[in-house]
Image (cartoon, rainbow, N blue to C red; front, top):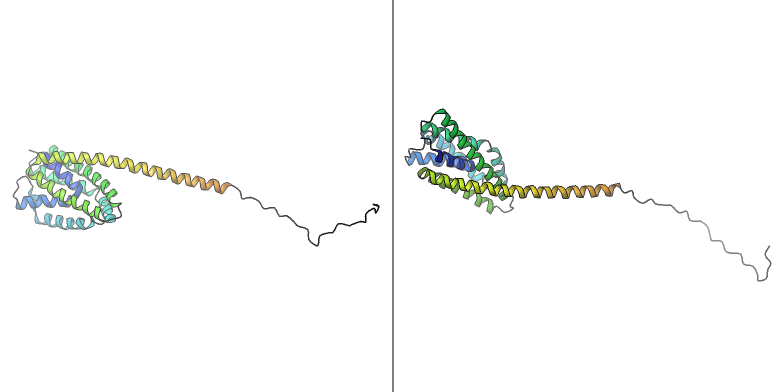
Length: 233
């Protein structure tokens, strides 16, 4: 039977931190002897690669600018990891080709949705000038992924319900945040255009022309005084 709940929850976790999701699944399968986890995720090379890449993301996730670049680069990678987890789980459950395609779409689609929400939220957090909120958000993501994947292994349906609720709330918050960001950009654009138009109108007004006034030179002429009663010519 296709483990739909586990595939969906693993995809949601992969969209937030794909390396941590693979690492937790592999460790639980290898040392916890969980039958639902495919052996492909328990191989030492897979665990080693996931551990090294997770350490890199653990460090980068605490630096705002690098975290934003990291998220952009992983826009295509995280859905691929989520889809790959769905495929190996479907093959482990001896599912047919159609079910395997559905598993890949479910894992990749849920990973893409959670990645978009996670990236949008972190853009707002990374804009904060102080580093503590960014570090706290990164730690919450790491702990949340580990807890969600572990819970999904033992209680797949309950974990899938929790993941669906968290994803729905995240999408709603992301939509609200995106609309506010668009309104803010629109106000800035209008204000910039208004300032530019006012500057253009000021540049079109010609400066006042100066009129040169030529003053007479030389000493002033004194009026000729005539004696009283002197006849005019």
